[in-house]
Length: 284
Ligand SMILES: C[S@@+](CC[C@H](N)C(=O)[O-])C[C@H]1O[C@@H](n2cnc3c(N)ncnc32)[C@H](O)[C@@H]1O
Image 1 (spheres, rainbow, N blue to C red):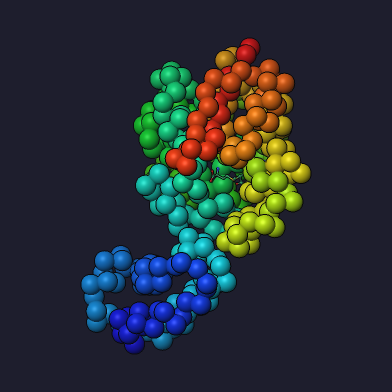
Image 2 (image 1 turned 30 degrees about the horizontal axis):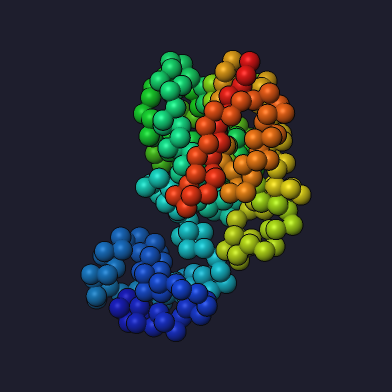
């Protein structure tokens, strides 16, 4: 069958009731399946598709119709203008999380020599890998952790993709359980959705992002409480903690860190003018 004829059927194939750009999604799915870039798919009218590949294409559309995100079907998602591998064990990187990378780039501390940075709950590795690629510094030591070993495998694959696997020490750890050293900076985008709210999230999130990456406990604050309580042991003097937060969590997270002897030094809103990143300093 010719690809152009298959693409003509697109409207009938997608039954998902949403504002999908069906043509674009079909082109992306085909380019992923045929290992060709999207321009080749669009320009090459006479491209043929085998019956086997067509079946695979229809299967992908079937999953798309069930609400599976395009990224989880093709296995990649863009973050900070780079394509990261993702799978069912990793949270799909979110555009609002790019703010952490911007904030870290602006930190004065980043100029220091022999810096150590820890990423807690790295998932696909998108935050730390973007930080490494953006700040382009040689003498920084990086550690990324996650409780989920399968997510760490994806982070490793991404680190290899960008040729920086030797720079990152990936450690399976329940927050700080397997951490043995002190850092200048801890970054984290921890799970922060209230447990009881997960069922209200859209299908693509609640069914396809890992529960571990979403569940912030009863009040959505469990991870912040743990990070605030234990960070001091793993931070150097005047070390920083840079955190993504839910848009309505600023007051609570500031209170939690204040109770644990941290000073708020900066707060940032995302592009939608929602509170999104807080930076705390270890007072000691
Ligand atoms: C919101 S996701 C963030 C993923 C990635 N850093 C990002 O920004 O896209 C939270 C991550 O924390 C990890 N996580 C959840 N509980 C954890 C724990 N107890 N210890 C370490 N990591 C944990 C999850 O597996 C998930 O990868």
